[in-house]
Figure 1 (cartoon, rainbow, N blue to C red):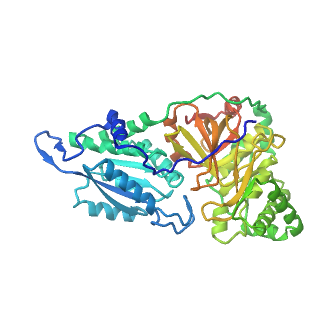
Figure 2 (figure 1 turned 90 degrees about the vertical axis):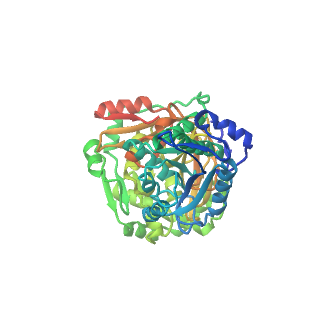
Figure 3 (figure 1 turned 120 degrees about the vertical axis):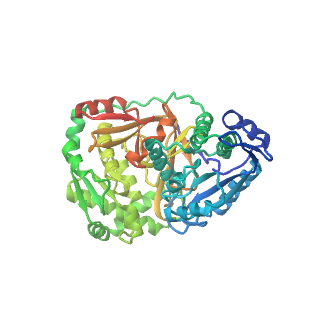
Length: 527
């Protein structure tokens, strides 16, 4: 097993390039006009005027300093980030006027649009800086060209889901960029200059998207480490799935439970927080302390997590085991965020899920039944390999998809396979409790999946692992991988499937297609 590679991604807003290099990079897709007073060719071609383009820069976020648990994390100070962006814009484009503003949702965005009616705004740049603030939608409705930008490991969920929605709706006035390199963003900004040539909003956005395609890093070497992964037949997989059961604690989404039972014979049992809490309080204290001590010895690093917090996490692990035994189940998924933030739980389930997944059982995040069921099916098919539920991030500068979450196994090849290093840190969004950073091995092929029994469909892509990011923003485990195939297609399916994906080490292609044939389902390849 090749050991894990650890690296920190460059900050999403760094500006370490020369003016000469930037101007050269912008030429192929967006060169137009001069850097000083520009001559504007009006669409009719008869009226010329000289003025600076006015571009509204909108930061879609809760506030300048984050006051709640969400990506990137509570307490995050966006002010230096916004300052870097604005300095880079003004330095690179003195022929444009950039007007910064913040908005936390549709109402704030609507007020901006109303105010901009008298400002003569030519276009919008929208930085998605928290995941789900719905700001870009209102600005796209203006019909003006919009550049939509992901602040990686902060706004990535909304960026992916909303961008896929725009593509499906055929919205032509929005261009999108997701890169760890500031120069890629700046190259896309240059496309606003096309307005001086009389270009339409759709033509400007198309140029922005062309920048994204042209600046995506070319494919690398996708040769992988050998990894024999014997797969069960579809018949045996389904037989064992029908013997399985998922416990859904504190809710459950999406509503696919009836379809799971009908299509796969996989039942889901709802469990209230009260039953989990009862098992938590009944957990034997000495046993919990022994488990906490074992975690202390096994972890390669522990930071900001006390021994008593480890004991609380061990009690939650014992509670998870107790519920599985009581109900004859092999999978449990807990509404952990709602439960912990709402005061319904005393500890995060992350370390318990880490242990369950290492042992061939299923611990699934956020009561996401779709992903938990995906874990059940393919952990069975691979004879014990754990699925890694994640919130993915795309970075065109590195041609990577980064699978990020605060729960991950450290035995990616199954319970009897080698273990990789792991660290115990606080849960990222609120900096409380205990969660896991698993430093997974590089150089291996992975298969990423979601199942949709209600549509009789399996979503699929492959990627070669390339390392682990230590970026502090967002979830603790961040497995980096290079997708196999067209990375542009990875922008297209998030609106139908949601943000989560489940990643397994190994090439599961043959087994996935055989299972789909056996069930009469469709396989959708998203890259």
